[in-house]
Amino acid sequence: MECGPKHLISIRSMMNLSNCITLWFVIARDASGLLLKPPIAGIATIKSQTNRLSRTSLFDCTPSPPGDSTRNTSSYPDSASLYQAIPDKKPWTFGILTSGFPPQQLLVPFVKFVTFQVWRVMMNELVTHDEQGRFIRESFQAGNNPSPMEIEGKKYRLYLGNPCPWCHRVKAAVAVLGLDEDIPITMLIDDAEKASKGGWILPESPLNVKDSIAPQLISGDLAGVYNYCYRHVLPDGERYRGRCTAPLLVDVQSGTIVTNESNEIMALLNDYARRKKEHSAIGTMPEIDLRPVGLEEELDKTTKYWFDLLWNGSYRCGFATSQLAYNEAASDVIRGLREMNECLATRRFLMGDALTEVDLKNFAWVTRHDYAYTVIFKSPGGRIAQYPNISAWVKRLVLEYPNLMTTIDMKDACGSYYRQLFMLNFGRIVPYIPSLEEWVSSL
Image 1 (cartoon, one colour):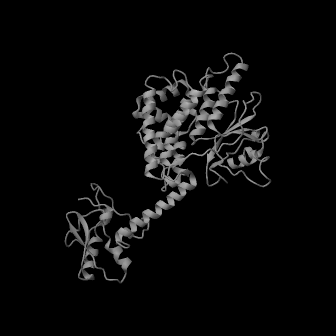
Image 2 (cartoon, rainbow, N blue to C red):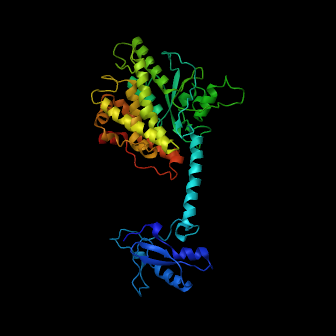
């Protein structure tokens, strides 16, 4: 017979709690486990029960044999037991769940109510919701209608964070377009405790960089970058009030923001690579066009489609504060996975036979789905390995474009969700997360 902790009553805890108050309950055993049965005819019987149970493991329902007052609890249970002996040193507790005071019928609803209210306040502070608890993704766009990037000189710098899928798609575009040497990247560190605003801080920059760029753009945190780029707009002493988000593309020569919208950055990078190829010797640039001329409208519609179902769908699951909101989002994710798998049954890539920006955007999503979104966001649909066409597409991507394997540290990226989104993971436990290589090989 097995007994869980909720079925067990610690008489010793009850006596300590009530001190000198007469106890009116006694432990009685029956076929279903330990029960409380009133009334009881005196303290002597309680003490007798207490002495007997003190020699018995709380996770074992077998009492000591009659007359056995010398049972060695340190060696019990033995190696064949399913249970463990209670350690000599364990975390201190009030013992309220085993003492029966306050009554469980009052305690549990009260704790549930308080916990839920605190959680909901934190969730509403983190992101925006409508009155039904649906997550609303606001626009925090900065910069003004960016013009084509200049090819001459290293004028630009990208600020990207490894955990962020919107940053990942930009980094993937830089990798497959071969722009690593053209546009320097500052890899941000997610540390909300050190950041003055938002969650990104800047790493230490090499000495050669410090001499050629404003210090506000290479030290401190991302909020400092925003403040510096808006220095001519804000009144003296005032700081940027919007959210300081990444990815961020900055013109370091003028110290201004080009844009912080990932779709715009990817379009600018592709245009930059196309024009650079036209100015370069034949064969020096890769034959890749992530946004072919004439397909822009279709690409934008497809981006919006997958954004609604998958990319934002998982976030809508994770940040939902009502069952209705979650159910709606979960339905979209399941539908999106099914349709993506069906789409790739007859295509090498999502838009046909050629790689496009849509593939890179979905790549950033699938690499986080199994070990971040399905767990901490409760995003449904199962593992990517359950979808043979999506799995084959992932392997095709990394085989034909091996630079993609360098665009994400999967353990750090997925682990960040558990470390930073504490309102979704109060215990701050980070589950097992494989490397990108291990994950791909398992598909």
